[in-house]
Length: 322
Figure 1: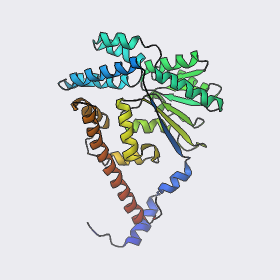
Figure 2 (figure 1 turned 180 degrees about the vertical axis):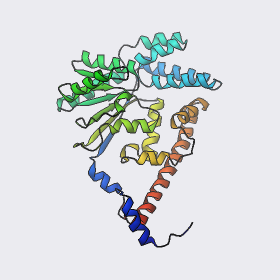
Figure 3 (figure 1 turned 180 degrees about the horizontal axis):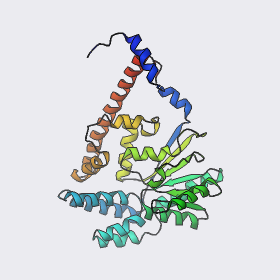
Figure 4 (figure 1 turned 30 degrees about the vertical axis):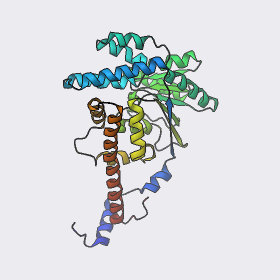
């Protein structure tokens, strides 16, 4: 390592061109993030459907061409979202037997949990944004909430700009719930809401962070509650355990996740890594071991980021970082 000479002069020059907020200062600027994971025990038809879809994905994925792997990965994500989104995708894949089973499930247990949670928040005069990655899931959730007497605004990528603006205006006004796809992560500030529910989880941690960032940003006056609804035994449940235990995903401050992921292997793609670990595993126990290796890499990257931050804070002359 090369020793730095004239440290005081370097610190003075650096302050002239650079403003750094310490981690403690960012924490004071923004309210807290409060995260909870609701693990849902799926009823037998849903549990067996998920198991059979997952087994077929794993069996076909071992020898599949890259283009087929992309389709199988999409099916795996849809299986963690909703039967309503999964059924047509299974039919397109030619898995008609599984498509019929998915189509026969009219109300998922996760939907029921969502309705219970939303009503609890509405009783406390709190608005709720519900995130899903898939438009069929969005439509199913919105309809289920409306059937339960909850007024809902819909926001997704197929809407015109005017329709998107109107959906946000309604949500900012009298409509208590916005059901949204990833499209709401594009330039929308929703600080007037501080409760969000993830009905399915992106397999890319940065996309999870982008969802949270719609609410947890400058101007937010309340602690932000993030609720993740996941099925027990699903890939999403295992992935979330890794992200929470290895890098404390929901406790990071703005910008930290990007810095951590940048210290993992240069060409590492988290979503591809998760799916590759799944299809290459002989069973769930081996999949858990593969996930553990991914988690260990993330933990090392977080430690390296922390050490680099401390060194830079000391160099710039800000020695009170947390």
